[in-house]
Image (tube, rainbow, N blue to C red; front, top):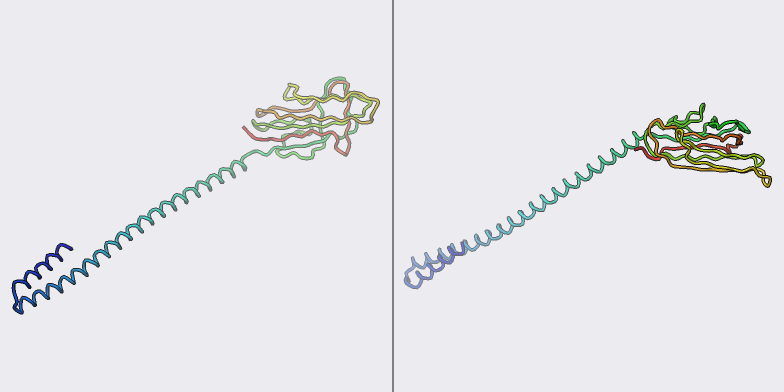
Length: 227
């Protein structure tokens, strides 16, 4: 368009130099008017081009924002999915925890190692502890924690052990003493159990243990996490 404008102006200048009649002058004036119009058109075209560039840039920016929004929505949906998975994991995860006390006053001595039956159930979530036998049975494979406490009058000795199936795991011992009235002991352990494994406390032969309504002698366990 700039080339066309220059050509028109050159043509007008040439005609003015070679002709002096009124027709030529008028033609030149018309051509000058045309040149001015072309200049305006050129300016408008340049403005239109600049506007198109801005519109194109805006469209690109909108596309970028749309992409970012879609990515954000995808991340949100992924986060919601993870939360739902955690909820399902928490809901489906078995809840196992128990505590029971011995009561019954003085227990023992026995002429053989004897499984203690903690009859006073304080907590038994999941019902994995049997208060009729004193045995905890693992409802599923996992890592469990067990703790037991005992009290004995110092005039008697007391030795107790925690068993996993038939395997002795940990023990406590209080020797007969004439210098104090009561002795106490405690122990605990974390065990990897398979479903159906049993855990219980045995009082050794010729040992004593005491409990009453104060729940001095207890046996507790809980599932830490399943496997």
